Length: 325
Image (cartoon, rainbow, N blue to C red; front, side, top):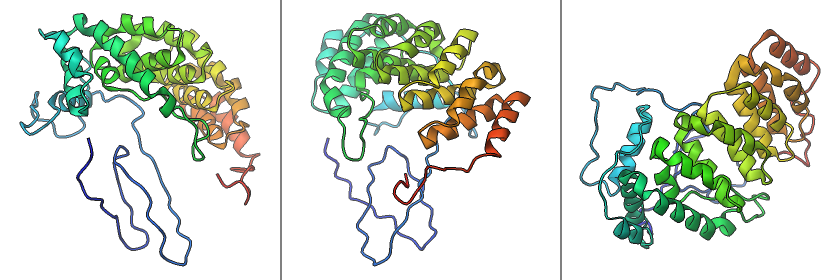
């Protein structure tokens, strides 16, 4: 739907800090001065799923206002913030009518239909799985296209069916694991992305996610590493697979593997040799993530490895006037 909201310029004296939600449409404006203009951008994101409300929570339930165009979506966000990982309760629904609404040109209608299908429970899973495949295929060329600003493309975009599946909980996991073995990489990637959004609920998928770190396509491997961190349970075999992934040919896989190892803490001490090698990664950001993983492990051996390296290296020996990013 085309927005009718006017743009809002953020103005202020030098040193002003602006906090925005990253999903908000945003862009730079022309520099009308004769001076160079610099921007420092910091992105803040959760490193763990919410376990309980972090605000003054006085009531068990919450009802979206009547003016909310997508109340099921709002309620799902509320449950997530409260640490409620229970799936959608099964209710009766006209599956044929809702399946038809998934094709509606209005995003709002599609969202409401997808979440209504999710609430219908197990009978609606095949409908949502088919829709997930279709919507992923429709956008894969666009979302993975490379541009001057993004030489690697982006992850296939989750559509309304994928989002709705992530709210269903354990009942949807068997079907998603089947899709994680699909012949098309973008379907595998999307299925794993949905499992990621489920978080700890998807712990039964851990063996498949660990195996997925050896998938033929980097987006699948990248998403599997992220999913393992979202689930947050680390067996010895998972740590071994993540340690190997720190040396993956793709920088995105290496990054997510290091982030997962950092989350695993002392149990990931076996990954220290791999992280030591990653401290010399060709990607400067991944060198930081390797150091952060050693800090997250936090054992005397990990700390000694990190300090020995930091004392003998500059922060970024690759940065030059010709290569500032």
